[in-house]
Length: 234
Image (cartoon, rainbow, N blue to C red):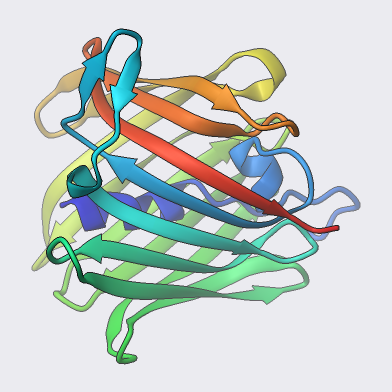
C-alpha cells in the first residue's frame, strides 16, 4: 500500500498546461524555490520524540527517493528506494517523457529493467488534467487534478481498480498558507464515507526557503517525518 500511495502521489501532484506563454513546471507545482537540480528525501514513521525534537532512527525508514530536475524546472527522473532489510534496498526508477516541455507519460522499472508501472497524461486545459496508470499486478489508477492560478495542485481525486473492481476512491482539497506553502489536505474516502485531514508542518528550511525537515500529521499524531536535501544549479 505504501508503494501505491507514493506512486499515486506522483500521479496526482504533477501538473500540465496548454501551449501558453506562461507554463507550469514541477518546481512551481510543489511550491519549491530556486533552480533545483536534485532533491533527496527520506521518510520515517513510528518515531519517538525527545522534548520538541523527533529522534530519527535508520531502521524506521519506510522509503527514500531522489528527484532529478531539468533546467525547465521539471522532474525527468525519480529513483525510489524501499528497505528490504537493514542493509539492502529495492530500487525502482521512474522516467518521464515530455512534449513541448509538458509531461506526456512515464514508465517505472526496477533495477533489472522489469516493468512496474506506466501512465499517460491527458490535459483538458491549463488548469485541469487527468492521468491513467497501470501496474504490473493489474491495478489501474485514475486521477484528476485542478490547479490554481499559480499552478499549484488545488483539488482532485483518484480511484484504484483491481480486476476491474473499485477498491479505493478518494477526493482531496489542498490548503495553502504564506508563500503558497501547502499546510493541509482535506480528504474524503468515497467508499467508507470518511473525512480526514492531513497536516504538513515545516520544521526547518534551507537558505533558499525550501523545507528540509517536514512533519506530516493526521488526527494530531505524527504520521511521517521527512528529511530533505536540495542541490541547485549554479
